[in-house]
Length: 63
Ligand SMILES: [Zn+2]
Image (cartoon, rainbow, N blue to C red; front, side):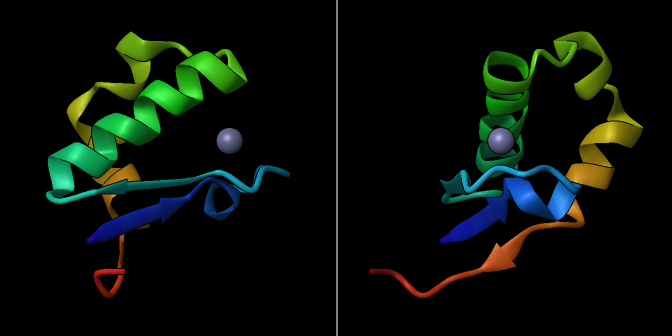
């Protein structure tokens, strides 16, 4: 499983997004940023921004 922690983006937020693939977890992070933090989905979906988000991916053991 891949995971991204919202706090790794400097936010005071305990959300953790998980996914099977890099795209899944990046998409989940974008959705979270838009719905919970009022971010702009078009801006977050820019290739360079997606790459920046992907840098925060952690590998996790299957639970
Ligand atoms: Zn958050």
